[in-house]
Length: 615
Image 1 (cartoon, helix red, strand yellow):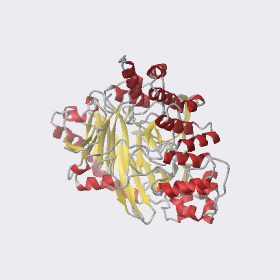
Image 2 (image 1 turned 45 degrees about the vertical axis):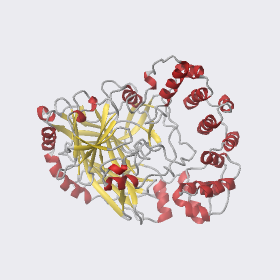
Image 3 (image 1 turned 90 degrees about the horizontal axis):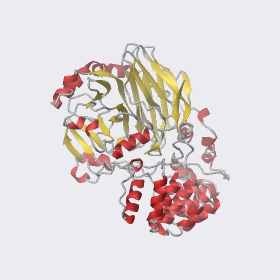
Image 4 (image 1 turned 120 degrees about the horizontal axis):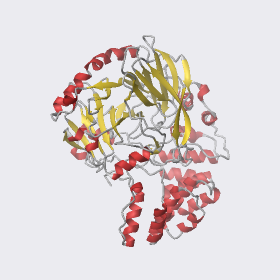
């Protein structure tokens, strides 16, 4: 373990209010009837109702302080790789030593923003996304890490964790053979349950972009998603493949060419850059750009404060053709594949040829050697994929060990969830295995919704009733959930859930009386008050916290009560809403509404422009 010192914002604690519904997914598809049958089926299968048992991570700020992050380094004579086990196993950096080139976009700061399933996400490097459409629940959480002996004596860095919304064991094996310019990453998803589970995987690779950066990929068509709720099949053109030539944020999911091995590369004006290749299971490839309009530029500056130059784009690789899809992973089954990341050099004239087939063919030729070697590399890795760790180097969560205590599932010896990894947080649930869950005066943890049967049989107390309600609601039993929360009694947690589900301001009011200082509770109660009784919201705002989320609600309340001048004054003072959501643009909306009411037409300040469609 080595120290990596970065300017970093504090991640903050988890939000204790359970996410009873999933966050709005920006990738809604409304033209399903126009799509091929298999694509339709995969898009409509496996949607996530909520991220429970995980709680939201929305307590971060935007104050950067020099902070030490633990990192793990793999290095040979050709490349140096840096992995962050405490942040979802992110591949933070990959340096080509002979040229000194950083092959990835390496964010110089750690700044969470609201883009992930649990809210907090940060840009840069290579992120591993498992479980469900979106940035995974573990992207800002620790993973277990250990050293494993490789088949040729090269040490393997293994990371693993339980993805809690799907109960998939996620394994990442990094290794760097002495003679290789490519870092190899073996990925395995284990489904230890006896039933099918929706599976999802996308490796999300951030790369620097410039006016002449081009993305090469073996495809002649792509599914275009431009945040207009449509997937449309388009031909790959020269303009499409240059990230900075796009005004608006857009996704291109490339349609694989029959007979071509999967790869994607980002190259600069001279034809040099990063390539990602894989074995066949990881078939999907994607290009995402923020766009050069004010909204796209603002998002990049928001994610990387102090950003200079043209910013970054993302090239990605996934199990399915698009990120709107889930696939069925059968019970007691594992899927595995091998990825490789390293430098690529393509003849510049060919790489930037107007004829797209010339360009992509040149890219494939430059990668033939590493593609040819992948099957043998995967076969070598398969001999140690179940090998027990030799030395523990980082500890993740104890949730995997807790689930094994409940289920007795058989998981690989290569990804052990030892009982000693459980903390007091996980151990607090162990008595439920014997029919008891002792009540405490503390804040309830995220409900283990998969433990519903045990909760229904447990001895009654307020905490058991509370968790029963959450588990019932997650399972679609709203009436049963409300009954359980009423049985839980006069406590802020059950009252909040009643208020949330029934949009009951009286329940929120009582919850605030019992827990007046919880900002997350204030935000929900005030937002509801503005929607149903804007005048009444004034009394809540009078005693609310000094928090950007509250300031944004003050603007909203001023507009709802017809005080556009007050709304303008609040916005003009400046609001830095750390948790602004991808796909949302509330501060712009408020500014425009105030200006329309006042008849002044002042332009929206650049710092408020987060529009994904170009605004």
